Amino acid sequence: MITSTSNAQMKYIQQLNSKVRFRREEGCFAAEGFRLYQETPRSLRQKVYLSASFAKEHPELAKVPLTEIVDDNVFTKVCDTRTPQGILTIVRMPECSLEEMLPAGRRPLIMVLEGLQDPGNVGTIIRTAEGAGVTGIIIGGNTVDIFQPKVIRSTMGSIFRVPVCQEEDLGAVVTWLKEKRVKCFAAHLKGEQDYTTADYTGGCAFLVGNEGRGLSDELAGMTDAWVRIPMEGKVESLNVAIASSLLMYEARRQRS
Figure 1 (cartoon, rainbow, N blue to C red):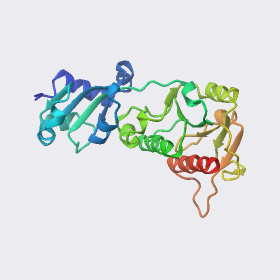
Figure 2 (cartoon, one colour; figure 1 turned 45 degrees about the vertical axis):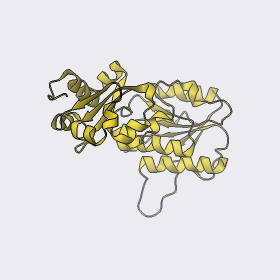
Figure 3 (cartoon, rainbow, N blue to C red; figure 1 turned 60 degrees about the vertical axis):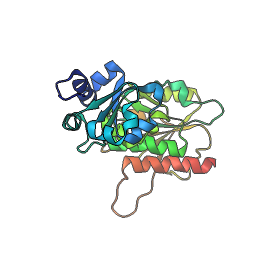
């Protein structure tokens, strides 16, 4: 049993939780909770840690290869959540290419995220994307790291089933999408077209921007059309995750 936070494995977990650069160098991240343990493909599981009390309640898990038992107090200190469930999985990052956004036999439906900073928003978009049938998500380099603990928890396992790519140059991505005949729609407050009147039945991509600033002028200027979600009252805009959900499900509605 591991009984000290000075243990090298415990320090490793803390670094995975707190340092983007370390996660990328290692190609791994930490996923807390029983559901994420279940959702993680076995091929991506690197190590599993159980708190001593959790191991007593689930002795079958304690027998799984590459599983370590950790003192309850130590386990709590190295986890990202205040009240951890008692199980943490070290996971190898899923690999993805842009070409996977365009699966054979399916019309592409892609989300492009620029500058989003709230982990909950990004995680919710990934989770909703799975439900709406999105074929892939492309995340700009200035967006929160998708393997950050709060993002991972918010995806509820969808991170393992929806292709997600991180690309530094979203301008190049938009150019690539157009070459692939994917029409690019900017979700924009100055959009002249109601989002429900645009045609999403062909290959399409929605671009959404930072929670406060929206899309950059440069990226918005590269898109094929700007669409807006009508607002009543004094509300200027919706939360980006909610707005993204409306766009994704409108595309799904039109295609069904």
